[in-house]
Image 1 (cartoon, rainbow, N blue to C red):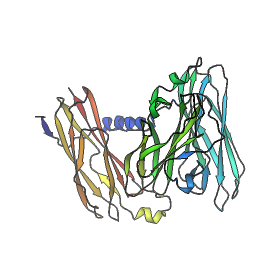
Image 2 (image 1 turned 120 degrees about the vertical axis):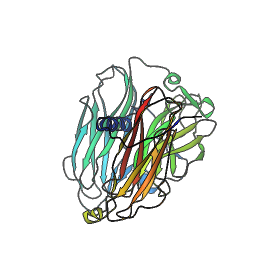
Image 3 (image 1 turned 180 degrees about the vertical axis):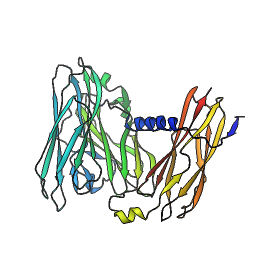
Image 4 (image 1 turned 90 degrees about the vertical axis):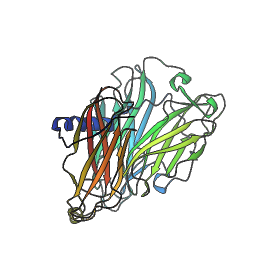
Length: 393
């Protein structure tokens, strides 16, 4: 029988800072390594289920601003190929002019320029990025943070690819097999990031036809809210194509969500997204009078325990706002954790008890951190992270 420990309240300020750092690093991780050779671009996509209008052309909508894409994959490039350049198109579908204020690259290896003049209704501007390709052989995922008027949060664009010292066979570049061995993949998971209610978010990666005949990729069972497309379709023999996955927000699915699709002939694609409320249209008064979750202790120390010990703690969540607090989702980042106790809205001025039970069986020895994330209806605190930390011996 596992040992059970009920913890008393203990704050660890330094550990809390470390936990925040770990959480941020986790959310920004996953350097992409897609691509092999340039895909043909003169064929249409095969869609697993009808895509919403805003994503039908492969673009991404942010209010009245539409980006033609948010990911550019250079594919496999050689160290001798020199700088690589790509462009993103920004279209204004609103009534007022917009401006691209700033574009910030994640590293000095990427130069960027953009349209400086106002972009009027129906017109488009461009963002051009050049990756210098000077750092040697490695997979890369560079980001551009784009600030546009009329959009409260910046838009993140990705430049991906794999730099190699010499060319490798397609089958080696895409080692994961699907569709009866004819389809090659680098990965079976994709991440669309944060999805605000009312939005669609997407990710894409390159896949390869490893056979000597055209390959039309299709999908069987697909999670509700997920759509997939492959372009070109069919994929020419011994060539690559872009597999795009998009997730449509739903008020039935909040917080951390995995979506899945079965590839006809064998194989599976999994897509991760985090669904949150959209507060962009709320006035300052609405936000001031909304709910606000507060907690006496966001970090609790469960001490040093033997592997297999079950540790538990009750977090007291107080609503210090003026409207009822709704927890849309409570997500723990470890499979051995279970959360319970808050099943209905917390009234203004009220409090509720969130019980966290964590079984440390199977955890490696050493420092251990459980992160519980609350997705709320509070515009000033849409996410609240709770930390349960200690050591397993």
